[in-house]
Length: 244
Image (cartoon, rainbow, N blue to C red; front, side):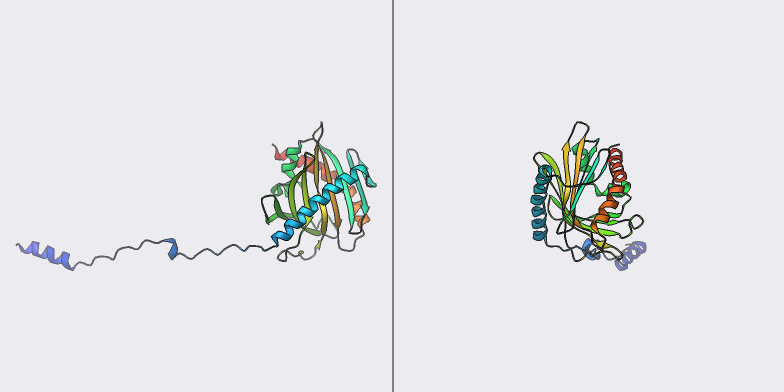
C-alpha cells in the first residue's frame, strides 16, 4: 500500500463527523398564549332573549290594534311613545326603498355601522352565544350627545307572521362595564320589524329603555325625534352603498 493511500485512510479515520441535525418541531417552540375569553352565563342570556322575543311579538300585536301616542311626524316617518314603569317605550316607522332581505342583512352588519352612523363612536361584536344569538357592544359619540351612553345587548334573528324580525335586549357581562364618562343604558325589549311593501320595506323600530343618567325620558325622546330624519336618511344611504 502506498504512503498516500495510508495517509488518506488515516485522515478519514480521525476526521470529526458533525452530529446529526435535530429537526426543529413545534414542541421546541413556545406555545402561543391563548386569547382571553370573556365569560358569560349562556343559559341566562338565552332565557332573556327568548323572553324578549315573546314580549316583542306581543308588543307588535298590541300597538297595531291600540296605537301608541304620536310624538313626532315627518314625511314618511312616524314616532310614537309613552312613559312606562321601566322607562320610555318608543316605536318609530319609516319606508325604506330596499328589500327586506337587504335591510335585514344591513342591520346585522356591524362592520358597516360606523361608516354611516355618526352617532356611534364604537360598534363591535363581543361574541356568539349560539347559532342564532350574538352579543354586541355600542357606545355613543361624545361629540353629538351631552351625556354619552353605551349599550351591551344580545341580538337574535327570527320571524313574525312571515315577516323578518331582529330582537334585541340588554345583558350583563362583568368583564364589560360602562366605560368612563358614559352611562349604561338598559334596553328591556327592542328590535326591528321588517314588512315588505311595494316601494321596498316598512321598517319599524321598537325600544323600551331606561336611558339612565337622570335625564328626563321625554327630553331624550324629543331630542331623538329631531335628529331621526337625518339618521334614517343615513340608514337608507348606507344600505344603497353596501349593495354597490
